[in-house]
Image (cartoon, rainbow, N blue to C red; front, side, top):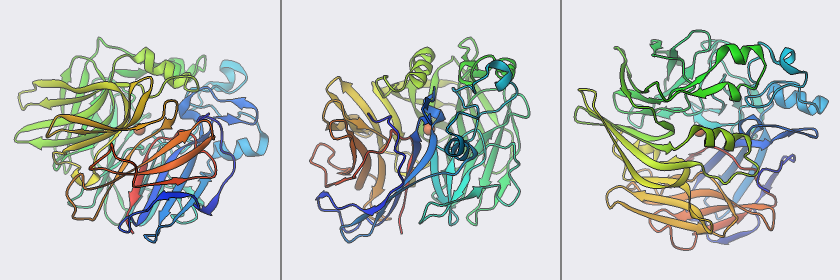
Length: 455
Ligand SMILES: [Fe+2]
């Protein structure tokens, strides 16, 4: 089962490779996700509560891959290792002892969601707190990262930063739990120095997961999913149970100038979009693309019942065009259960032609999909029924290769062998046999996000 723990930390050269790894595929794929959803014998109650475990696939360009995985040494991980007991409150997991034991306790930072290398630093990311800095080679945890004291203990640096392909600056945001109805945004320059952007005031205090970067703006699709702070602070229920969808409130398309100026908020009837693929300026309009969810109850139940739930949980790829007058034109581009979308990071802020995602087209048809916006056509690399699958990451054949000319790297899971394999797919021809398949000696639990660093 893909949600079983991987407790061991490995470091080995993958010795079972089908096909031939392309010579031009050199660099490192980092992936992050929970490595275990249990502490001792106690099972955790929410997909976001597992201890962050980073995988590193180093492609030598000589036909070889070295695999390594290590847990991030967070307080949650260390406490669990030391005591074998659930000692810290999670997002959906309560500490034993009822409301009193959970009252006024924030969720533990498990550093399990995203991973980015910027300015020479490798950061494991989680959306409710500060990142953890890791050694890029050994994956040893170097500590919680404050950007030289610029990010306070209570600050959040979200798990979905976006780098501008033109300037090399990294932008990000963090939910601000110290003030109501506000969001913090950050710019991290090429030397990894963090700069605070002006605080943004919102019509309500949301729980927000992602954003996209255009050439001039940060673009948010803020859903009316709202933490019920009093209930959360009282500890009577889990924090996840305290997140409420309030569809009588609007979705707020929030457009924040990158280099100063007032944020613009365009309200639209409530919808649910968590993962944003990309956004760009088209004349005076802003276009933003994301995975839409149909139903909050279904999503929140799937997050809790993840072990038995049918992944993925999104329902459509949606594009919204926001005009200067504040009109929003929304369109579903393709409808199927999908999640973990990805576009070529070189296209961040420009129109992208291809959107890649993990998706399901029927009980026996799961796989890695590519949607070609130019042709309006979707292709899929199908996996055997019952196999687990995750986020595809695109790697261009060369730095100056055309968009779409490269490989998709994605993990798949074989339940019969209880083992994972890394697929190297030709992004131009997903339906073909993989270019190469690297079989691990073990499984990698269902993870979230990854990034590729070319050496
Ligand atoms: Fe995410």
